[in-house]
Amino acid sequence: MNSTEPPRPFWKQRALAAPWLGPLFALVFVYVLFAVLAPETFARSANIVTMARQTVVVGIAAVGMTIVIVSGGIDLSVGSSVALATVVIARALNAGAGPFFAALAGVAVSGLAGLVVGTTIAWGRITPFVVSLGAMTILRGAAKGLAHEQKIDADARGLEGLLGVLPDNVSFLVFPPGVFVFLGLAAAFAFVLRYSRFGRHVFAVGSNERTARLCGVRVERTKIGVYGLAGVLAGLAGVLEFATLTVGDPTDSVGLELAVIAAAVIGGASLLGGEGSIVGSVVGASLMTVIQTGSTHLGLPNWVEEVVTGVIIVTAVALDRLRHRRP
Image (cartoon, rainbow, N blue to C red; front, side, top):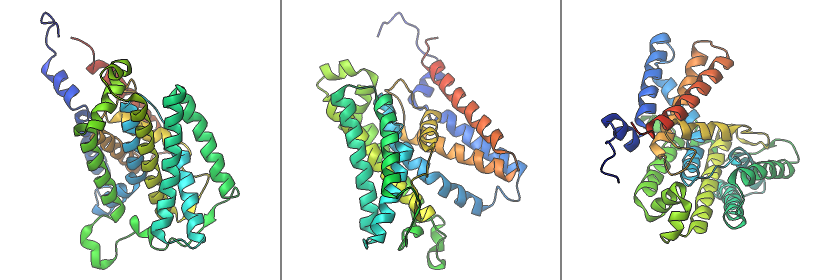
């Protein structure tokens, strides 16, 4: 570092160290605002549980998307992968598979799709946007073909309990198991991304791929691993989506990829790569859920929610650029 360069202001140093602090303050502010405006409904404990359940699918997929964005990539196939997973799970259940193996089949298919996308990007040296855009169409078409272009009804065989209302004998848990699965995954991948060798390689590739290669990082293998993990997490999101819908729906989750990317960006992930955090993405996903739920409780039309969310996304990107400017 050039000693003649002036040091960054304290607030910029803290912002760079924890880019999720700003979104966290925004989350608290928005929640308090809606609680004041609609105290009789929004501030109820039951509503908090509902919002947590609504955040799970986007949140789990956002964990995978964060890893992809930190590596300098993007994945537009998340929504299609989630829909394909619900169809595979429904077909497996109808074929007589148990709930665990049906869920495992959905995760495996999405994980395999992620590996194919990552391999194509890494070894084909094709722009991630183009590859994932093609995968989005391919996976959506595969889901429709597997479902014969219609929803598949299936006996969930207990999978609905992942995000359902808790029985009285375990009501002390407050939140359904799917919420704890989400939080556990977020904690595990936050640790992996920040403290493991693989995580350091992901940041290195996203910051400067050429330098990472010169330092001995196996760039291609890292990229394949990143997209494979993102695929597995999309599959897990698909399991919880099926738990909510209890049907295999090939038309489900259209546009989910935009919400997932938005959650990561709001949480401080830079679309230029090399920066992002799982904590930030969880906060970003929660913020969007609070805005959506609060707007509903106030009786606001959907377009207001969409405008506010869009403004927050643009503001988050603008703040990201501001944080990286020299004083």
